Length: 372
Length: 250
Image (cartoon, each protein chain N blue to C red):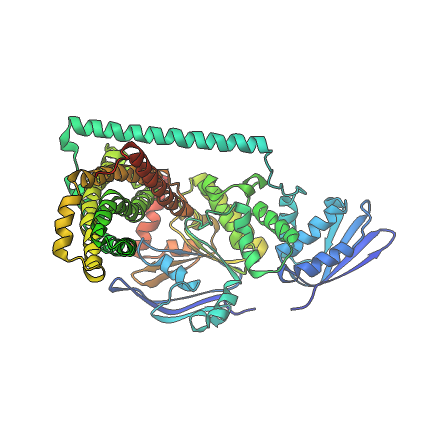
């Protein structure tokens, strides 16, 4: 492909430009330099001759038109010679569409406007949360009046994925946590020769804090993210609009089964976590601290009151409700573009983890005294 | 120059347990605008995907600009890809970018042009595609269906392709926007010297803007020629296809 060129001469009648070579996108920078060196008096007629031109595309035409206009040449003073008919159509089309209007730059908004807008979005989001809470309450109210609305199948399916599906990972994680925590505690109590007290420490810690919190965190990451992604994808494919059109309430169909399932499943999983965490402690106590299994469980009966276990399990449904609320709300907030589902899923995980830890702190403050 | 831009040679494609294409052959000379029609499920879109190197046919050859694209290594295939543009059915604009950024994306990837020239080119293509500059800073989600198609067309044209593939360019547009879009396509094809292959269902597009029609039926090309000639073909499916248009128009 031959390089573009430009000869230019000035005479009494006006200015003559002779184009050579390929004026196309592959050589655009070269063409740009050629045109930049060009000086054309803006009040004269301009004659453009294409007898040496081998190729011309719309990018090349644009350079000719835009640069001549930038020099103040009126397009009607330009005469075109020796162009092919197709090239002439192209030049006329481009000259016609590029009516010398510059590309508008993105406007930057002043800080105050920016602040106002951010505040507006934050308020709208908060109102959206409250409205969504209201819709859930309304759906629950409908359900209380007409129990037939309960979607057994959907709840069962959700119970299976949220509860049974999470069972192996919960068991493994809490068991390992029990092992690690008992080992850490064991090293301390051994210094005082008070090995048996590892039972007190591990049972209280696991039942009251560790198991409820760890289970909630795992479920927030596992099921919370899944809820947002599922509902969000349904929003993208307009399935939620289809549900509304069928005369059903999307909250009733999609949110309540998930909410109910997770509120039932999380306390159960927490109890499994309690058992496995204490079991992990017992294994460490038996192998490292000379506390036999028999001694361990005898001591457990004496030091772990039912109240503490129940306290841990009462927290679980509250965590669960918070996770379900955040996840479903974010699912409904998804907009119809590719990035949105990912954005809102991330938000769900972050927000529900923060919520779980905050709620846990509130419980700790409301009910601080440890049983003796 | 006399060599056809696109040659399909006995294409066979198997999908879902049956043969979708059973020996599809045609060729498109430079500068021609060709319509590809056929009932839903006859594999028009699949054929387009095979032409642009996204899906491999089970047998047969596809030659673009004289190169058998399914025999090329990926690097060479990508060089060939620079020479054609594609307008996907839903536009396939990148939703996280503005219209101007969408149109600029191929330039950023394939050229080393300074930002100033790039912006100038982008603005021209947006104007050529019939959009106002107000649309340039909008995101695809803020555009109407017709504007999306125009923005996608601007992106398809930005690398100065010689060949354009269009998958249902007028689907989802109201008849008035569809005719405007057809007109725009025809003007651009003529003035930019483009060759185009258009898969379409739209009868009015056929009558209005294509030079030639290829009809796919049960895995084969059953008619290939100017619209009026194809419309006069004595074949059951073609008769009912064009008759449906007559009913539609009343």
